[in-house]
Structure formats: structure tokens, C-alpha cells
Image 1 (tube, rainbow, N blue to C red):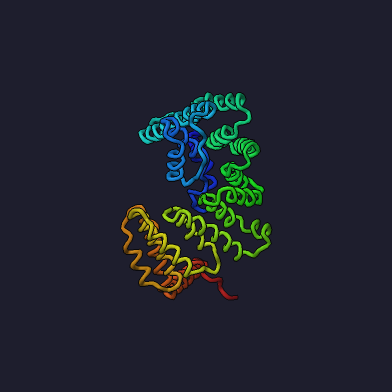
Image 2: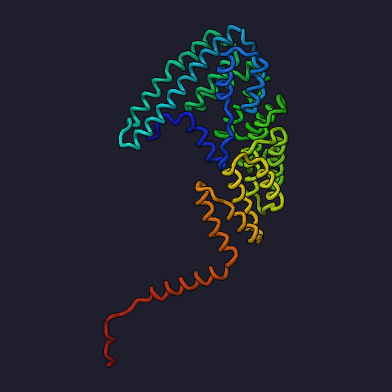
Length: 368
């Protein structure tokens, strides 16, 4: 049984698996509200808070007046939410370490402990909303809390209430689009992402989310927009490019865009090489750079540029990439010497065929 403690990562990880290793697909409002709670608690100017949130998360928001008593009341609930999350994170890390040492708390007990820890936070949100039933940010914050707990449907209901109360808040539309992209109807997500972008055309996260959903659900996109698959790819890539235009130094975003070319048949080789080359230019460290080397090597290998591919593979020295590197080394050999591989296969087949012939140990019957 899964430890409930992966609550903070589980729903994201599940969707990320469907998103073909796209870890940054879901930029949840919970991150935004947690930042808000931290910054507002220290009472900086609202403009400074908004600027810091945009710098940290890429999400542009209008921050309510920090002196608003309702906002201050919600801040206290969100701070309690943060404290509970941090405490649970520590429990999970500590328990994992204990298990490695042969100890640790059983999952069932840890799950119970975690659920109990969040009971007062849930009640605080519910009590707040009873006192302030028309306060849209409260529903958005509570929805993020529920989503982190893996209660996605319940979270979507809170997002919907927030959207109805404040239909001009793009975050509510984006979060609902995330939900529909995961649980359907997918076409709702197309409409809701478009609305979020309409409300805030300068937010790269909305374009990235939209691009990923169009790319993954190509059949739905074909039918919804009345276009063919190559045009669906063009639409997704165009949305990625718009996101990158707004956030040009975002390495994970550039990686998402470059990886998208692997799903396009036939491979758009030149575009893929340009995408990975541009991604390389904004890598922050050796691990990111060497990871891009392997992608470039893979693309160049596929078009017969074996020497260049070999050089890129040789430049990878990070142990974390050793398995991928070794796989590419074998793949490069297979691409360079396909006849050798065919001979080996044929030899093995002949050997197998010979071994499969039954050998009789009995003397032949005499002829009468």
C-alpha cells in the first residue's frame, strides 16, 4: 500500500507519467498560495509580493491588499497548511531513512498519522468558507489543499466555485483545465486553457499546459479543431514556442518542447536538432548539458551522423547518465554495423534450429 505521505507528489506523478516525463506540467495554485502566505506574513508591499511570485513560479497575479482582514484570515489558514505539509514531508523522509536501517513505521500507521495531521487544516478551510462564502481566493486555496491530498474531484468543485465567483481569475480556469485534462472531458481543457490565456496572455505556464494537453490528446484535438495530426503537432509546438518566448531561460520548458519531436512521424530532424541546440544553450549545469548531449547524439545517430553522435556520447561523464549512455553506445553500434547484427541473428537462428532437431538414441529397426 502506498504511503499517504506521497500526497504531495502522487497526483502530479500520476499525471506526469501520462505526460511522457513532463514534470513541470502541473503548476498547482497550492504553490502560489503557499508563497503568498509566506510573503504576506512578513508584510512586504503587495507589488513586491506579486513580483516575487512571478519570478519564482512564473505565475503573474494580482495580490489582494495585505491589510484586508479576510485576506489576513485566509493567510493564517494557508500558513497552517504549509506547516502541516512541511511536517508530513519530514515524517516521510525520516520514515524512509528508518526503513533503510531496518526500522520504520508501517505504512498503515503512517497513513493514519498523516490523515489525522490534516484534519485541523481541512476544518480550518471549511470554517473559513462558512464565514466567507463569497470569497473566491478561499475556494481556490482549499481546492489546492484537496488536490495535494489526492482528492482531485473535490478540488475541482472548489475551483469551480472560485471561477463562478471570480470568472476573471485565470488561475481558476487553468486549474480546472488541468483537472479536465486528467479526468476528461479533455475538450473542456482546451476551452479552459484558452480562456486562461485570454485573461492573462503573458503567462507562459498556461501556454505550456495547453501545449502538453493538445500534444498528448491528439485524437481529441483533431476532432475538436477539425485538423489533421500534423496540424495538431503544429498547434502544440506553436503553443510551446509562445511559452518559451515569454520564459526564454526555462530549461524544463525547453526540454518539453524538444522532446515533443520524438512523437512526430516522420521525425522533423532539423527542427529537433535546433530545439535541442537551443535547450543546450540555456542548460544550468553539467548534468543538464550532458543530458542534452545524449538527445543530440540520438537525433544525429538516426540520420547517419555517427561520428558526431559518438563524440557527443563520449562527452558524457556524469554517473547519473551512465545507463542512458551505455544504451546509446549499443544503439550506435547497431546503427553503424547492421550487417554484423544480421549475421549474429542468423547464426543464432541456425544454432537454435540445429539444437531443436530431435536426436534418436535408439538403433534403427531391422528391415524385414
